[in-house]
Length: 148
Image (cartoon, rainbow, N blue to C red; front, side, top):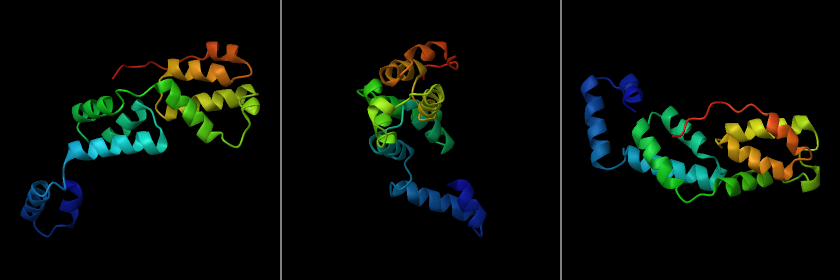
C-alpha cells in the first residue's frame, strides 16, 4: 500500500499521514485481511493450505502472520474431503466412471491439484479412488514437501 501511495502522492509526508489514518480507522489491518482472504479461498474456491499461504505471501502479508492465519483457518478441515470436493466440482460434467480413464488425464489432475495447494500424499490417496489405473500413481515422483 505504501508503494502505491508513494507513486501517486505529491509529498512523501502525505503517505505516512494517510497510512496512519487508515490504520486508525482499521481499514489497514493485515491480520483481518489474512483471515478474510484465507476463509474466502477455502469456502469459495476450496484451495489447499499451500496455495492460500503462497497467495498471502504474494500479497506481502508477513510470513509468520500468514502461516498462523492459514493454520487457524484450516485447523478442522479434512484435506481428503476437500480434494474430493474439488475434483467433483472441476470435473462435474464428466461421469465418475469416465474420470481419469487415460494416464495423461490422471497426470493432469495430479498437477492441477498440486497447483491448487494440496499435499502430494493426500492427492495420491484420493486420486487412487477415482483412477482407472491407480498403480500409475505409485510411480509419481512427488516434489519435496515442507511442513509449514
